Amino acid sequence: MTASQPASADKVGEVGVDWLGNDIIVEAIHDPQVAGVTCHVTYFDRGVIDRLQKGNWFEDPSNSAISCQQTGPIVIGDIDLGRGGEEVFKQRQSLIWKSVVVKRIYDKANDTLIYLSHARQVQDGSAKMAVSTVPLHGRDVIWKGRE
Image (cartoon, rainbow, N blue to C red; front, side):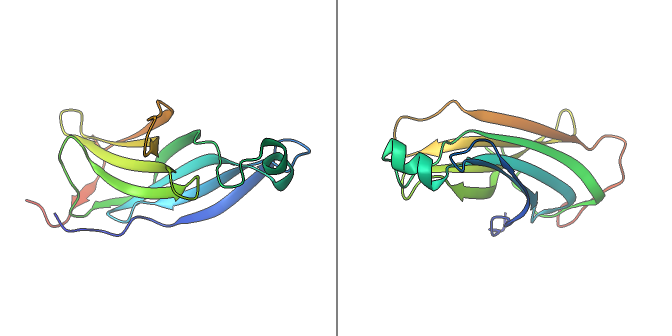
């Protein structure tokens, strides 16, 4: 397996949710090893007033949602086929301790790519997660770098 750089995100939407300046951010993520798949990830961005009220300047909630779809011809590079998959994207939700992570796992038995969005914390691990799948069965998929 070759090491790949995590994907970068393009901000495609921002929805204000209250008068405190809190927003839901929507970002598009293109998997750097799987062309033709786009994931949309949403997460919460706390406003200045909310940060002042709660006294926690350096942290956003780690809740997230994800939806992934085929958006073009699928070309799969040298991806990790192990059960643990590999990290595709990481967004910090605090200065040091917390991130929202997107991992890709290949389900060979069902010929499906699974994208898992979850919180990663140094301590007090979180059960906050979301999942999206991209079935490959019946689609013209090109596997590069693998036999």
